[in-house]
Image 1: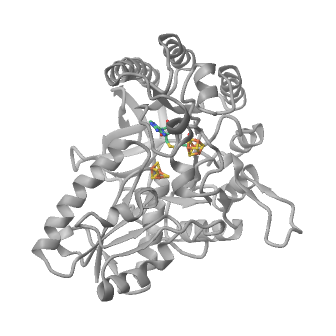
Image 2: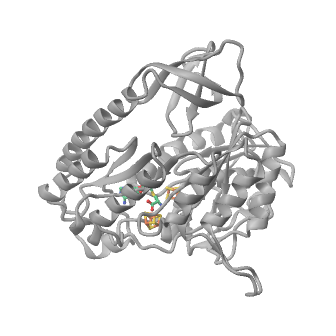
Image 3: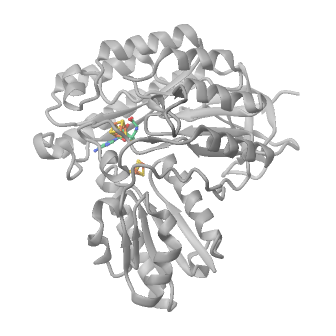
Length: 441
Ligand code: SAH
Ligand code: SF4
Ligand code: F3S
C-alpha cells in the first residue's frame, strides 16, 4: 500500500508528517511521491492564516479528481485545519477521513473503518500525547538535516493566534526519548538536528513521579549538543518573554549549537504588543537583543512580524518600522493580520484595518527588510564560512547549496563535494536571499 502526504504550515507539521508515516509503516504503508500511485492521500494542514486554509481547499479539489479517476483511493485531512473545522471538513466530497494533531495513533483504525463504513473523524486533543516512542520516517531526501519535536501544544494566548486551540495544551516530551531519537539520527548519518516547539524556552520536564529536579530547555539543549560535537544543533521558536540568559550561555559554550535565534517580535508598538497579549514590551525585547549580542557576538537574529492587527495606527506601524531599522534583522517572516475564528482577537477586537492598508503596510515593511537583509549579506562578501551541504541547487546540478551556522543560504560549484559534507566557502557576491560562494581549497 502506498501513501502520499503533502504538508503545509510550520516545521512542527513536517515533524508530525514524519510521525504519521512511521505509524502507517507499521501497518504496511510505504511513502510515494506521486498522487497517481497512492492508495491513501493525506494532507497535513495549517490554520494560521486564512490563505493557508484556502490553499488546502484547492488541493482537495485536485484529490477529488483523483478519486473519480481511481476507485478506492482514500483522502484524509490531518493537522490544524482538521482540528479547527472538524465535521465541517467531512462535508467536502473529497474527504474520507479527518484526524487532529493528537489522533495520529488512531489512523490505522480509522483507515480500516473508512473501508468498511465510510467517513471517519477523530479530533480529540490530549494533555499527554508527545509521540515519544515513535521513530519518525524522515523526509529529507539527502538524509542531512532532521527535526525533533521536544514539546507539543502552546499555553500562551497571543490574542491573534489559533495554535493553542488547534494544538491543545503545552506538554514537554521525555528527554530520554529525545536523546534516543537524536542518537538514532546521528547513527544514521544526519549532520544537523533542529529541536522544535512553539515556545522552546518553556520546555520543562518534571519526570513522571515527582522525584526528579526539573530539566530546563538550556539543560536539554546542552545534553543534545554533547552527543556528537560534529553534529549541528538548531532550535525554534524562542519567545521574547521566556528566553533566558542560560540558553545564550549554553549556545556560547558549544561550538556546534548554531548561532541563530528566531525571536518573533510581532510589533514594535507597546500598544499593539499589549493587545496581542505578548507579555513583553519594545524595551524588554530590545534588552533581549542586546543580551544576545553581548553574549553571542555575530549571532544571527530573525523574527516574525504581523502588520494590520486590530487598531494598528500609522504611529504603531511606524514603531514597527523603526524597530526593524534599529535591530537590523538577518531575516524576517512578515504577514498581514488574518482574523481567525475563535481567537481572543476575533471575539473581542475589531479587525478594523482595511485590506488595502494592510497590503500597503506589508509591502513597505518587506521593502525595508529586504534592504536590511541585503546589507547584512553584503557584509559577508569576502568572508569565509563553514557550510553544511544540504543538497543540489534547484537551478543547476553542478551547484550545491547549504547554510552557514547563522542560517544564511550559500550556493557554490560542487567540485566533487556532496550533501552531508561540511566545507569552507568564500562569499563572492550576494542577493538579499543568497550568498553566492566558492569552496576554499
Ligand atoms: N510559536 C511561534 C510562532 C507561531 S506561528 C511564536 O510564538 O512566535 C508563526 C507566525 O505566524 C507568528 O509568529 C505570527 O507572526 C504569525 N501569525 C500567527 N497568527 C497570525 C494571524 N492570525 N495572522 C497573521 N499572522 C499570524
Ligand atoms: Fe501562537 Fe503565541 Fe503560542 Fe506562538 S506563543 S504559537 S504566537 S499563541
Ligand atoms: Fe500552522 Fe498548525 Fe503550525 S496552525 S503554523 S501548522 S501549529
